[in-house]
Length: 288
Image (cartoon, rainbow, N blue to C red):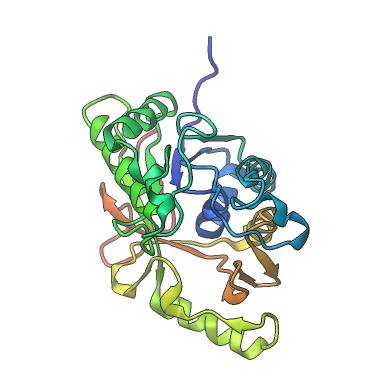
């Protein structure tokens, strides 16, 4: 007989390894530490990512094309930092391939996630929902945060899987989209500019995924003591992220603030906070 599930269960659906740590690392670490079941489903291996360390450049898709298998190990190391033990790839490792940025030939490659049948992929995710019975699901908005085809597809697949299971006992009570309030991001960039010289340049706030008006944010999860775990998880994704204190850069070497407090927009289900207030717990108002 399988062990009983914890009272609180969360499912996160992400496109590539590293997306989870950047967007939700503190949230995942907090709930894992509190005894919730935190399940991560990653839709691709991130095979088309650009490699930061020169010593690993041979893994790139235009050379040995072994970046995906390497990033499996990075993801496992990141999850160890966050205390998350249930992490899996949609349909198994390599079922779907990283599609590259929008408009590139990789969008049409065999196994590209962008070209996947949404109902088929959502069916695979629905099986995970039936198994772990999450009350809370976290994914991207309809633009995938910034228009990457795999992020958009992850959104479509996640929302469709919620629909497919809506009339079952495992129905998801609350769905959240990742977001960053404009005021918080602006303050983070102010701190980065004051620090100066950490990276060759500074990213544009307009290039940060999921930035929305403050009024649209519905939940604020204080990372508190879990910010260090988030930073460690991001460092574990060394092919993709360089971390320097409370800041980080991707392969473009442009600095961004590393946010220990994470924000969400509730798009399905009822808020557990009093009217006019932000939720401080994504499980607020849900039954075990």
